[in-house]
Length: 409
Ligand code: SF4
Image 1 (cartoon, rainbow, N blue to C red):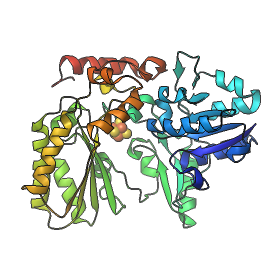
Image 2: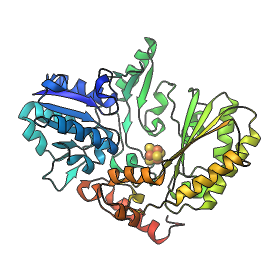
Image 3: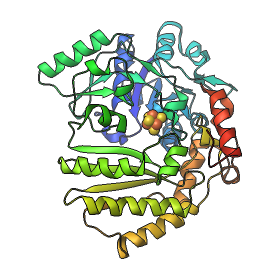
């Protein structure tokens, strides 16, 4: 079996430099002495995807190479139903078992394992393993990635990372820490593969690195991060919404922490989700207030505010909630306030969310259902097929949120 590896994030003509998932796949295939070759001479094409919308590339490749087997993996694999019409199989979750079965028993046997979705299967599991035994892998940016942990203990209501994967951490922290120290000593840059290193039992032993995604808990515990740019996943536009989504960052902490980071020479970006269930214009008023307060207590420093429009993700408690286009009205008013009203500052940069037309296209790919279903809400698409963990816990939270939207806990 000869295999071609395609990273869906990179143009087909530039595949010589690939991302993390594709680099790991290369390592794993070579471990089993499987030939890796260009797409034209391959028997099978493995495509790593990070977003459901990449099904279009998968469809194009399958159309162009009808006789070859095409398989999809990568982080988008936990939303597999959109891909399956366009390929032979989706490897949901991790791929070690798929590759070792393919190497030892053949591709048909590999397709039969429980985390491979094929057109004739009605149910699929998520392979929860993580390649902790893989060596640090050097990515295009020159930094080495070290495997720390997967999943997240926090389980914010909107986040598939917390709900589609069981939390796990590297079972051999001694080796991990040794690798990290050795690479640093050799003058190499390293990054940790983890959603939040503070959750790991060995966090205090890890050498500090200048990676740029930090939790509030990290900063409360360890102070100023080394990175020059700090990205904060704030998500809800108000404290009420953040509390409701189980990401309880207070209004005051948000403003003061940002000002403190700026005062220490860091630039800050807030990542916000527009249109979370129960959002109203009052929530947006609080965001305006947060920006005004930040401006009044900082003399210099830049704040970027980046919006994405919420869309339901499979496995998550709010994934069954209806979408609404109201967020766009709220955003347009916010934009008007910012660009032509009291909100303006050349120290604040605003990145717009998708408009409703484009948001619905992304949501259709993610949930693989109809427009009507998305506006109505419900439990369909991948939720019907994939055996996500935490299903009972998810259902309890979804029901509480439906029955008591202001106070579900
Ligand atoms: S949003 Fe961040 S903190 Fe919340 S569950 Fe996802 S990874 Fe964890």
